[in-house]
Length: 201
Image 1 (tube, rainbow, N blue to C red):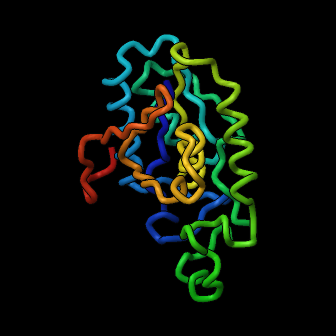
Image 2 (cartoon, rainbow, N blue to C red):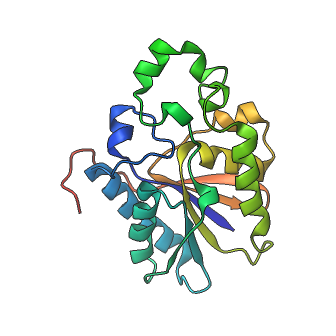
């Protein structure tokens, strides 16, 4: 089984700024989302013995993974470059509104970076995510929590469920839910509601 998690909300998410391979810190809401994901996973897993946490090395994912790990008896967080977000190349760090105005073709048919002509292609992201997936132990012995990103998480779920590219790109990317990848299917499990304006934990 794989539990797939997207990092909590970041400053760039709040600003609607493309992150790609650049980074920004988790907001107070993002920290609460990570805590909620950790609690949910503890309830789902119970005893974390035998489980692994594997994260993108980008700061926002790594911070989320470390918070989740505290709820799972301090499991070590492994980092894997293949789980990084898609790179938008020269567009990394730019406001989405600016890109929409300057480069209306950027978001293309799917609304995402694969049609931008800058940065990584769908095939490149799928190749690295697919290579990571292929190295995991077979089910039912697979016990992995994967902390990744919006676009790369879509690609991973699409590969796992054998979805066409366009359908993979249209999947939701919540920051307050966990996706369960098991027996070739993908299920969503929502966390407890997290208040937008509560103080940080």
